[in-house]
Figure 1 (cartoon, rainbow, N blue to C red):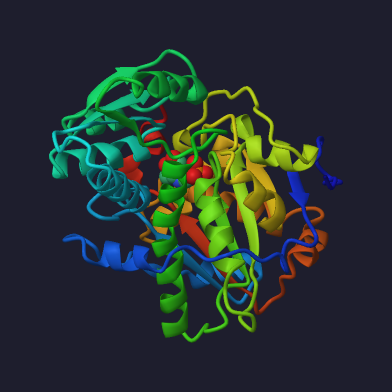
Figure 2: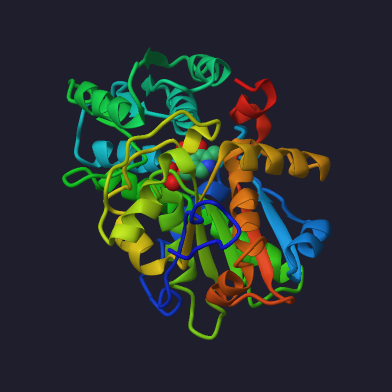
Length: 374
Ligand SMILES: Cc1ncc(COP(=O)(O)O)c(C=O)c1O
């Protein structure tokens, strides 16, 4: 961890030299075709934000705006749709009863809503466990998808445990966006589903003349499944294409990936309330960890106030970004500005010509914390 000389405490940040050359296998190519065939599929916008490029001292800044993805206000439906499709196809191939199953999951908001939407569309049932701290409007949006909702008084990890117990019932399947030893297949499909987002960025940057791709991608992180997909994408590209720096951004109150990277092994942290509800996770996904450990260049944690400010700045630029989505900008600001920024820029290989992509993973309506001050 590097010190921030003018700050009373060390900056919650770690840089990991050596992540750039690490390589892994790509996501399956058929995921993109699956999404493209869905009735409400369209690539989400990649929007240039020149004023942020000036502020941050880089060449170009783009935001990947997930405020409307497959009819929902967050990126999560990419993973849920592919995983539910694979789950039901496998059940059919195994000759299991064709009757409706109950898709069970725990959620900080967005994933559960996406699973509930898929269940409703496909004539299945959904049962969603919600931990404390999720905004009532986000809970209501899950129930509006005709899902059964169980509110849990504990934190996210507790909601995941309850969902896993419930899914032991007959005709129930756990569709969870985090993995642990013994439960890895379906979370793996969810990660594969997120690959479409990265494939779109490649095409959109090429259309903008940035064919080499980004020099840095800033990723909001909860359990690390999205970050796993991003690492997989950029560390499996044909050699000759640039390898971007990949930055993980978490809330200070739930920085399980930062803490795990500092310690060199996956650990759970005690979480506290945060407006970045979708990032309020205490344990990295077991299948994500090897990718995060080897493929992330840096991790940073930010306070709620920074993401609130970033959401306001993005709103002023006509980008709808909830607290989790805006964390990507908040984290980037923390790293690229302030005392010690020069060394951090060098660690990330950035200069005044660099192309940066922020993943704004939700719109304001997904997670109304930012607008209500709840
Ligand atoms: C809006 C939003 N952004 C980012 C994330 C982080 O994804 P992951 O938990 O895969 O790290 C989530 C997870 O729920 C989310 O809802």
